[in-house]
Length: 636
Image (cartoon, rainbow, N blue to C red; front, side):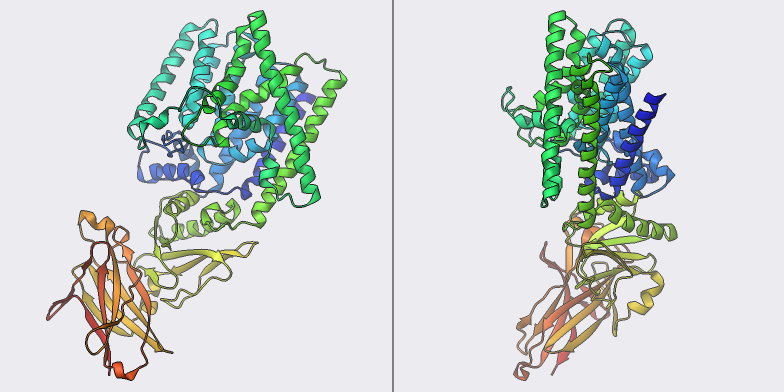
């Protein structure tokens, strides 16, 4: 009973350290994409045939997205999917404990559980919703299911053989790196005694599913086929072996993520290096000892754990034409933990060495926890990196809750983000909310505001300092969330019932165009040799031209002298054609330098719509005929 109490404490602390650090993880587009696909499938019936595109150029399967569908059925927002990932990773620690328990006494299994539960790189890479974080659970499930053979050379039951194949299949579908586990899995099944039909049927089902995914991913491949192969078949990227060891030992985590400016921080970095060296030595002894004993005594099953750990590592050490990231080696972590404790299997349960190892491991856990807490604190204190997609989850989830509240009030709400935002920011927001919503890029706080007569419009802005005024409408933010380092998130909210009050041009025109836009009117603000032109446009219809995706109509403003020469020719901001929505109102503000020399008068101000991408102008449809420009004012 005492042993179960200790492992329960380890699992509780493992879950706790992941949950405490969850608000500090940077929920970027990689974390959002599985949630996006799950939300689209659940609410719009859009079935994903492929998952995220990996840095290999190969698409993953949509497995993780499909697993998140029932989670989003419970409620929107980013927290529940992350809680699910944390729970599964904690369950992976429990499975590794049970596997290690079959290798030796309870104290040795507790050491394995401590390494798996608190290794910093493991926690950092596996506590989010991005697809690589699901590897430890699936692989731990496979190793536990087949542990009777992997550890003792005995045949597992048919049920455990089936669960093992399920874990291997899920790992292979999680990310293309998971395919590297197929050779060790097939080799293990081939050497396994008894239950031939269970092994054969499981292997056949696994290969059928994986080949179906592989064919789909191959057809979607966009890069050159040569990048599927290394330059030569000889390992030379030692970084792959370094990453595989880091997954267990935590080497360089403190140096990379801690602000090691104080003597105490540097002490933690030095201590973590010492801990990493001892654990990596133990892993190396475990690999060499397993191979030596397996070959000497012809116990071939002892060679399998080194193969589960070493085959992906050797394969990724080949000279590939793409970089080898640390998370590629996350699948090696479960087997590496088991190898780390193998040299100490024969240590007597009451020897001083056993107490020294277990006490030393608890000390290492204490150091690791302090490093993780310091790393998470740095992320919370300095959240702004210049990219909203890199905000800590606690900050971005606050924005998500505000948007979810709006969606509950009116599902037709639309969100507009700045035109300079990254292409992935729209998807990042959908993955943050956990529900499909109309999100577009396009507005500019100084130049362009967006509204709609029937849908609430929320314009999202972010930055440091103070949130600016939305100049086209002279409106401040309706909601502001400030962060510890002075950064902020702001929403400029325009409700349909406010349209008549805020969209009131002083000079109404109500002139249609052949483009489908209508000029509702305009304002002229003149002072200090500057002229601000504010125009109000509404989208009445959307052309069916298939090239509309490259359209980008912008208002142009010509200040003309008495002879018709252009004194000024500034363009408005405009909205790309593929982002138009029927009913949209675009409020454009453009400033001109107004000449003070009276000899240049009379001066005329012309207005039109121009698409620089196609070098064409829209035409105004007047009762007297069509024209490309309108005279807004003449100064005499």
